[in-house]
Image (tube, rainbow, N blue to C red; front, side, top):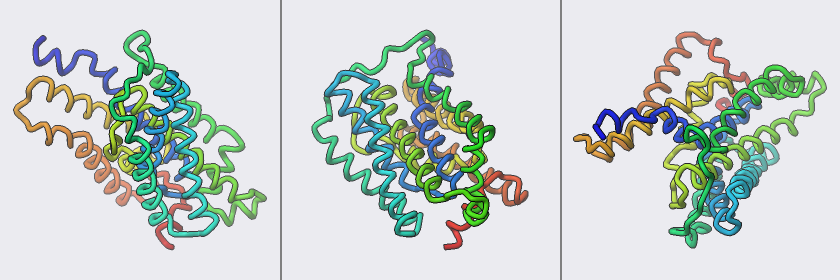
Length: 296
């Protein structure tokens, strides 16, 4: 097989597979920020989701149970963030970092016995797609339609714009904020489980490699719009797939440098997006309630 074939044969499917774990986390953080909270603990939630999902798959032999366990683990860890920021009214950034470190420590401890344990994961369907990929792709329109075309979605967006105005309209705000945080944790945990159970089919300490933090930044690139999370995630997935294929093609570029390619591209697009948003204030789609996070 020629170098060109290695680079481009089945590239789209590889990009989608690579983007899937990030897409779950990106959708989750999009919902969390839509209710006015920024959760930097997405990385930790993905890690506990990855270890819980992989462990459940090792024990049960069922990949679906692995995804469920990962989602529940991510949701459970996100409750810590909710307790800190909603109940205790602690700083969101410090709370997110605490959740990140807690998730990293818990996953490293719990995953010690999982290293080297084999699993089967999902059997690929037609075209190399898996049920995990189809689930992630289906969630994009489902969440988009719910957020913009349902009464409950309108209430969640109203809380994210202004909790005071939402209260004046008769909306109980704290259940909405907690719900947004927990749903975000559930989806990021699901993303971690997708990474370990389906994409890599292995467990390794710190295996998310910063995807959670990338998701927090790409929410801005997606303009806080669930419909735009797919192209934002595919941006990362495509560059990661290309970097892996360049390594397989014995590229002269250092493998360590190629490994940074998806992060560099994501960072570049993030910076360009921020510059454009600064030049056109009010056109980015950011929930107004996020400003309170920075003002505190």
